[in-house]
Image 1 (cartoon, one colour):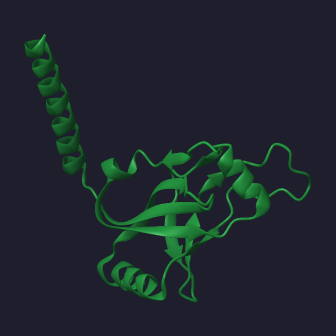
Image 2: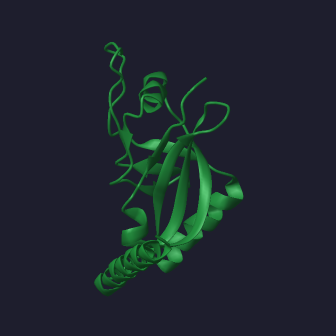
Length: 153
């Protein structure tokens, strides 16, 4: 029985307003998937980009080298191709080119068959005042939960 792997991009919801989400497969080599199974990956500073042939790649995704790998080990910050349906790719490419939105990874996980998948989102960057509003809402929610808990006791 394999353990659940769920590597999250915690800053994504703080820095971006998420509009649409997709689940994509990733093209990985043998040592990359072994490192991901050991939870040795990070997507906190990564983003997605289209190449000239219309293929979607995740850029700046850190997958640490496999500990038992030989000289055939992978590059830690290589570009990795994402697998989506052709219709989804065309829709995303049109949105990115026309409206200036960006595609960011939300979380990296292993599905029930053991394949690495990544949730990506079409997102619009937040301004500084939007971030302040997010912080204020989060603090208000914490205070409200604290008050509710004190009344229940």
